[in-house]
Length: 89
Image (tube, rainbow, N blue to C red; front, side, top):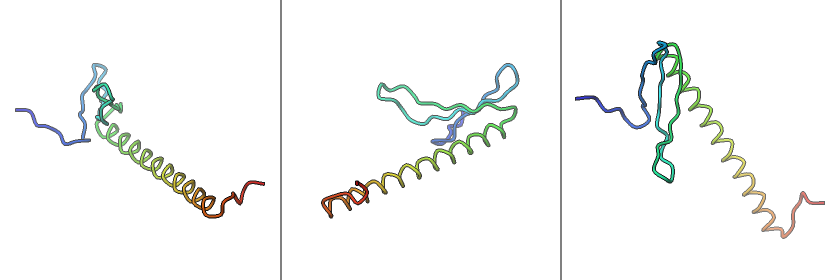
C-alpha cells in the first residue's frame, strides 16, 4: 500500500528529460478543482529548496499586506476620532 503524504508535503516525480518536479496542493477553487504549484529542478533537493524559498516569500508578502491593513485601520481610527484627516490639506 502506498504511503500518504501529510498536508502541504507534496509529491515528487521525474520527467522523461530526467528533471524532477515537486508539486504541492495549496487548496481548492470554488468549483472544486485543485490549486497546485509546481517546482522544477535537476534534483529533488533543488525542488525542495525552491519550494521553501517560495513559501518564505509568500509569508513575507502576507506579513507586509497585514502591516499595510493595520496602518490603514489606524488612520481610519484617527479620522473617526478627530472627525477630519490630519493629512488632507
